[in-house]
Amino acid sequence: MSTFWNAYIFGLTGIMILGLMALLFFTRRMPGGTDPEETTGHSFDGIEELNNPMPKWWLNLFWLTIVFGLGYMVLYPIGNWNGLLNWTSAGQLEAETSQHDTKYGEFFARYASVPVEELQTNDQALRMGQQLFMINCAICHGQNAQGYYGFPNLADADWLYGGSGDNIETTLIQGRRGQMPAWKDTLGTTGIAAVTEYVLELSGNEHNDAQAAQGQVIFAQMCSACHGQDGTGSTLIGAPNLTDNIWLYDLPDQDLRRDVVTTLTNGRAGNMPAWIDILGEQKVHLLAGYVYSLSN
Image (cartoon, rainbow, N blue to C red; front, side, top):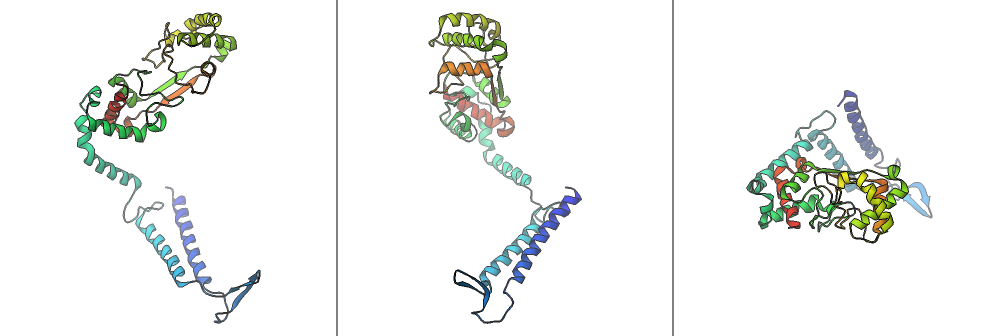
């Protein structure tokens, strides 16, 4: 911290404390006699304000808070002053992390070499994986892991990047970034409508046959590079299977046709954060075991 900001913080804090002390000293009692019935001369609605001192317990408590504040400034860091305790939030985090690792490190290490697929047979490993899921993942995927609009269902057999133990662990370690380009400028309204009907046909939904035939031609030219000629997608790049009637961006009370049109028109952008730096390798391994167990 620069000298200016250090002096600014100390100076402002000192002025505030001195100001509070002066306020307490000069407002102990208004100037006047010792008559307990003496008033300040101020009245409102027939009620007169007496010139009595503030209660001693209140004054003493206020002085005590000032002493506490001065002691806090001496013990803890402020500006460039590190404090007599030499405390930092980073240091406290490191100490607590070290205590956690000492307490639970043996437990996590016990399962580090167990394949993800085999973790689902161990109740203790699954319980810990479930706790990790509830704390870190349920906010997006739901407590039942069935996902929300734009967040995949982890309890079924439909996987964007593959559902093997290694695939799931890789997703947790590296994160995923899904990009679906917007096609409104390329295909126009007519082209998007045609491709929409073909996508509905692929998934076995009600569709317009004539438009679907037109959409099939466009799909082969524009969409098959990612989703495949047959529309079954690719786990290598996270392109979804369009034939299984499982949709990432579909609300139960909305028209599926409208959702598909919206996706084709505006595109989609999904982001799955990497958890390796947050949880560490051993916790990610346990979490992968729990996620794998949800669909197996």
